[in-house]
Amino acid sequence: MNGNNNSYGTSWAEQWDDGPDPVVVGSNHSNGTTAKYKQKLGDGFGKTKAVASTGFKKLKDGTSVGLHWIKTKYSKTTQKKRKSSEKR
Image (cartoon, rainbow, N blue to C red; front, side, top):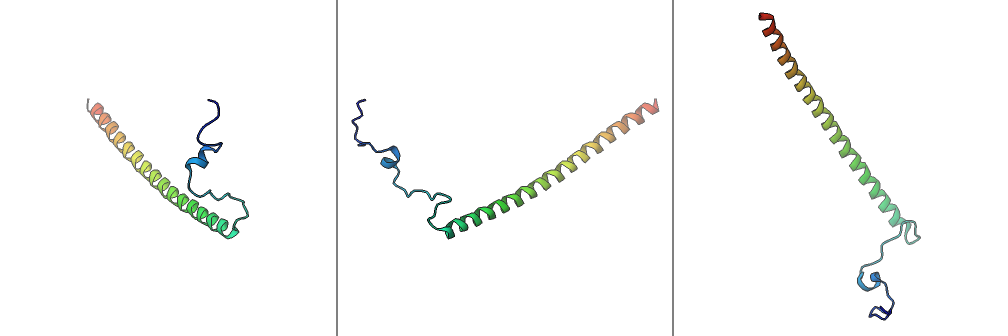
């Protein structure tokens, strides 16, 4: 290529991205807007933490119940084997 193209030296973003530029965190555009987004982000993390905590508790309880069930089944099986071997 010889560098002569129809873009006249513009970048891909300048050619195809017609949306507004994103707000840069830490810029001096509007501190109120930045604080509002930080608050929303903090609220989102709080909700995520609560959901994860609830999910972990359910997982822990389910695992405990499952292990107890396995332990009970195993002890019933071994008791049957002991009783049958004692009869002999």
